[in-house]
Image 1 (cartoon, rainbow, N blue to C red):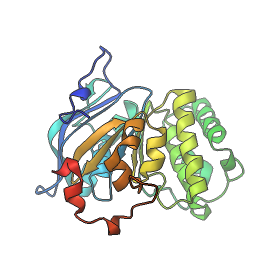
Image 2 (image 1 turned 90 degrees about the vertical axis):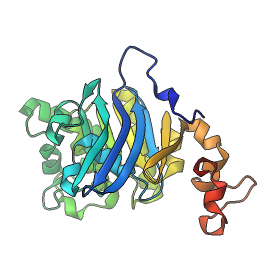
Image 3 (image 1 turned 60 degrees about the vertical axis):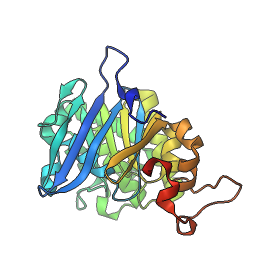
Length: 279
């Protein structure tokens, strides 16, 4: 793998859907959460951003979505471009208008509103005809929501709430969908359903996906390319298949040893010394 990320240099005249260069994010003017992160997402790709809790993944997502200021965070250095246009200084509403929508960690639905009302909140500026079309599109993607359309969101299961959260984001017809930990707290069968839906969005509608995940196995199985973050920086990148075959990734992120057994983090001695990218 190219350690200096020279593979990030565009090889085509068409700019990537999303390009981040040398991003540095600080909180409270002093705490560095992200340092020198560069990545790109080509149109029509699923790109995963992986890493353990606290690695800086969600901070990157908040930076590209224009919502850092809500947590006293700011971009100190670097650039962010959406379809070739700089958005580092843009606010969240403007970024949505330019075609990128984030589904935040924890769903954050309007708990007292119905499923249908939550969906409508995602596209309140659209015409009645556009709203109806977008809503039916969501119901085709998540058929189980059809019978739940009048149910108050607070009474839904975690998986159903995640479907509504993704559906609400889709109501604005985004070109880029940023998903923050969509599998968090969900049962394996529901996670499989959510990830199948993500693949359908890309395959059937050409939606570009930036997927922030701790579930490396699931993410690497569906992504075109992936970046692994630790301590606020990108430490490894490659195609999903390349990273699935990487010995370090298999041991430290997929829980697979070089033999036939499984490796648990608590059983690994000299953890950092054995991680070659930290040397």
